[in-house]
Length: 347
Image 1 (cartoon, rainbow, N blue to C red):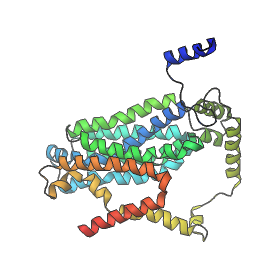
Image 2 (tube, rainbow, N blue to C red):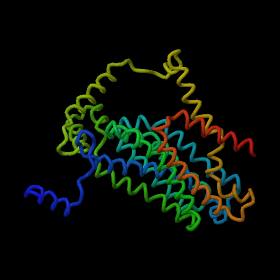
Image 3 (tube, one colour):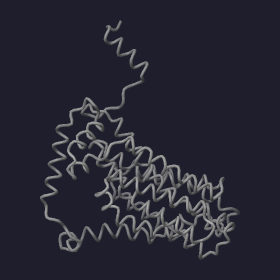
Image 4 (tube, rainbow, N blue to C red):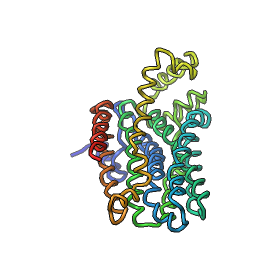
């Protein structure tokens, strides 16, 4: 029979539910999980944006009388916006904070989706698509950085893996939903993760590392305590973050020319090469115009092809996210490259 104190604990757990999960140091992970959930809405919005043009192609081309070249511009102009967004994302995140960058990105995306929804011409469509590109360009940088900065060390790899997983989820959901709703309603659906993200940012703390970096000491301590729980001892982690920031500040400032020095040119070529050459595999062309690609390949409707793509892509993206920390990045890169090479040889 339990003692009085044990009975009270059991009664409170029955009424309030189980306590939030805790890390190895006894800290609460509830706010970390909530903050990560809000942030990856940006990743989901990323997937929705890049997947939109495939299921919407037939409807937009029919309703607005677009030529093939006009729709091709609409489908691909998102990459121009994304490049610009990615270039300025670091500066925005450093000046406005991680939350500020996500908020700005979501607002720009909202403008883009509204422009697409109300579009009556190719120019309005292109403007909206360009804006969503700006948004996803910033999201692509700030979301994984924010998650990595708020997560405890033991969970950092797993939580950052949610970023590509949610991009794939957003893409797959857009493909499926786009087969049953009109292109204008699909644009309205693209608003949903952006609006929820903007609202959610009011309830989560800023990145403690960014706050420490800009010298907002009081807010830094409050944010770290919220992320680790009221009863957690954050003194050691706070000291480590401050030491890290001080060490970084003491290092000489690097410039663009340093990337081409003998010490860094090799890793830069490898890292940039991986990003550049994977684009030459042509995946964006398939993702942006999947529906009409399947029709050209002999399908009666592009809907079946896009649904099949979604059903294949989502579990494989999930598998990749699960294997990333277990098998390492290089084996996954080699396997995916071999698969793509086999596809090209088949065709």
